[in-house]
Image (cartoon, rainbow over all chains, first blue to last red; front, side, top):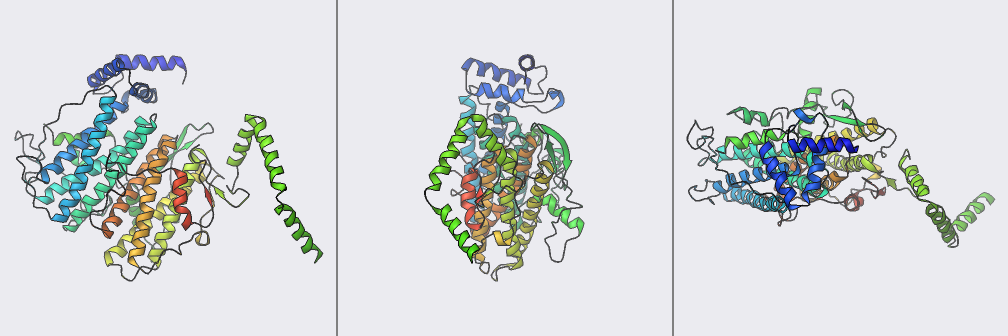
Length: 309
Length: 243
């Protein structure tokens, strides 16, 4: 990248003219980071610089934005599971089996560990932690509107459904967020390691639901029973997940990003491992299962917003 | 007769210890002459069409293609394992478990074929050879026993997750990082499921998730290949993956 271009990008950052919605927190965070002369700053700028010049309509995020997002998702999850386990005053434990409880405790405790990790990274970077949100997992925004899940604090099936949706959303969103921290090897690996742990959690929650009689696999499948469309945010979590078209970019001679091509799973690949052979349509359903799809941060933050007031 | 003798004496000549120091010294002389010479040597290795270096070791290559070849090798191993499980299911499998392995066999075959297609299109001539049945060594697995098959499946899935987690930082092409992410979460879902089959609730236990940070495991390519090598007869060299 040439130096003038770099200066131009810095100027953009300064005026925040190209920044998307959360402009004020970003400016504040940059200010704090500047004062603290932190280790986060170079990477913060680098990740912003890494965006294409036409970033105006794209989702652009600094490392701080990403850390705040993943911490927000971990905190949401922790609160949901803590209430289900009866760890939060005023919320009696759900009637889960001992085995179910044991697995959910594993999930909840790992969320606590990661909240601590993300919080430390944010504070060490010179930024401040946001105030703890107020949660209402019925989706009624503290009784100000009709509840989406009125029995979530008493019915394990309702709770496990919401738990699965939040995890599946996180698994999708992590895939898109890693790109924003690529300049930082430590954070890249931390996000990847969180991402696969989240996928393990999602699989377990799906297994728990299947054991309770729901038609759902441990991986996202076109054969899963549809998740009830209680709101657009919930529906969006699974939009595009049944994709059987996988694309990748050819890199050109200089290692730069080249043309986008799709893998011809539907026509040429010898993936028919079944006996008797699967129909082409059945193969494509397997392809959809074999890949989880990425999603932008807003898919998860919209879900979080349903349960926050 | 005389031919055979001649060959034997030639081999004996090569086996003489005297030759080794001379060759090594001349190698270092050339390699050390200039940095450019070393670079030339390395780039020469990169361009090897079949990735086979003289002693029969298969080099996975370097850079992004190296990472793709690395993933392709692991997916071939997994796909071959599950294909075998599917072909000769253990007698003590439940119907549900049989179904599980049939589904996962399809996923892994798809992953394998995806990488094959991606490498052939993106880096023609740089793909590693196919790891056929003769190149793999599953003698340590008792395919007739549920416990042996589940334990191996757990090993392979956990290893695959750790491999993708450790290799992500080496990928320079953003699209590859996303694709790797699309696959690793499915591997992690497999791992969680097979772990729960072995012991319900062990989907993310302390043996695989660091209890201090809540993070899944990540492993370097050379360590992953060292762990996978007992199952693969041909020697794989991951030392340049991502470099």
